[in-house]
Amino acid sequence: MKISESAIYFYGIQYNTYPLSYKPKNILDPLDHLQFALKHQGYNQSLLDQLFQKLDQASILSRIAKKLNGVKVDPP
Image (cartoon, rainbow, N blue to C red; front, side, top):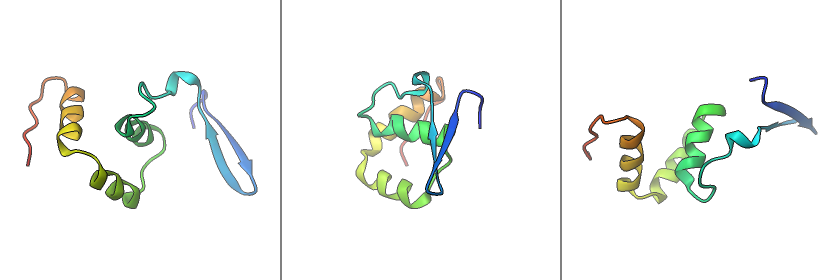
């Protein structure tokens, strides 16, 4: 856990809190939430499977291409 994070335990469940600077740019964008989770919380394969079934493939590839800083990403 980073210094800027804190954890609270309530009935045996850990809840992590983060400073506002960690807030996704667009709170309505599931890809921003996915990016946050992968950076700070790890991932759940079942949840990722469900998310990728609902998201548009072109939007996922576009976001990945932007993050790769110029590396070309071709659709499968």
